[in-house]
Image (cartoon, rainbow, N blue to C red; front, side, top):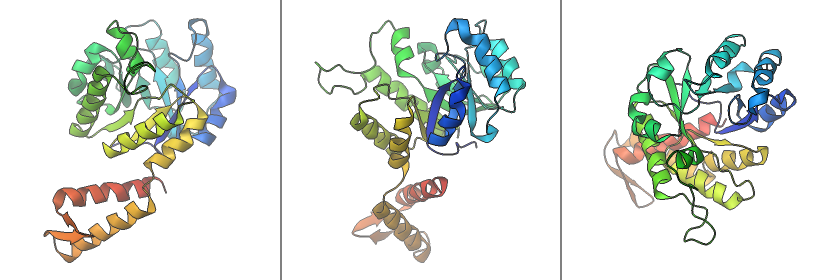
Length: 275
């Protein structure tokens, strides 16, 4: 099972090679983007920059254009000319779109068809992760926004369809044991909203969260790092599990059984992943 080098994954336009190292310095992994972050007239230049400016391969994901577009195969050819082998494929709508090239792939679920086929996609043998995208999803349904506006209740939070797809992606990732990456928070100034979203992602077992600005990476890392109190609790649970040999016991008045022990393990695994 592939897991990212850490929870903060930062997008970087592939046609801006002067930013590659800076992005890696700020985040756990960088997503060198050949798709939405690059204007159509700069696509070829972006691929050339990707090849000519290698950085740490174990911390790079390359986002490639969707299957069926004129840019898709040139993107794949460019990746093959680099040390990178992990790709994020935009707008995936079937497992066959992944198996056609066989590269380890994070499938980006951001269309209505992709959303209703997410379980099939997650089961593809070279699918190593799922991510979802809210704004393309809303646009694909003829909508205007994935979030409530300032003049509506719960401003800044996801509408029902986005929440549904977010949950479905998480469930499919868990069912097929692949990494789950939460969508970007596009309002860079809304730090409180980002922090709340990261906290919710952690509670649901997301593996990582993608971001579009270096300032967001630190908030994501902080959100995925368990508090000292939570670590102490998890260690007490694991010590109790050993002492009681799998039986039910209590920690600070809380009944502890199998599911709670699994939650404690998840907390401690995030301590390991974060160093």
